[in-house]
Structure formats: structure tokens, C-alpha cells
Length: 74
Image (spheres, rainbow, N blue to C red):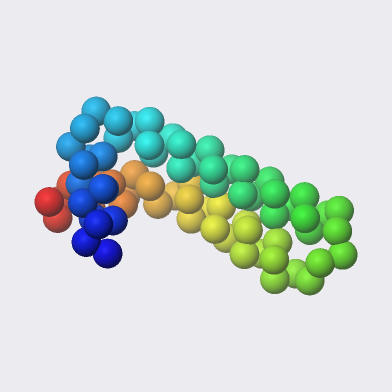
């Protein structure tokens, strides 16, 4: 856990904070689209697409907040 905080602190201190935030948001959008695609085009239970959609929404909403908290903690 300390290593993760060190990496987040390094990203928060560098000028790459905006790029990392948008990369996480892009991954979140892709996860949401993948979840919707799995839901519509396969016969898998509802759990897998729901998890993909929830993880995607978290990745869209949380990165900037996570980097701000790492900056405050460091």
C-alpha cells in the first residue's frame, strides 16, 4: 500500500497529473462500453456486465479525487 501511495505522490508532484487523470477516465469509458456490449451481445449472467459498468464509473469519477487526496497526504 505504501508503494501505491508513493507512486500517487510522484504523479501528483509531477506535471503529468492531468494526463494520468484523463487516461483513467478513458479506461473508465472503455470499461463502461465493454460492460454494455457484454450485456447486450452475450448470454453471460448480469454480474459480469454490472461489475464492468460499476468499475468504469468509478474510474471516470475518482481519479482526480484520488490524486488530490494523495497530494494532501504527501
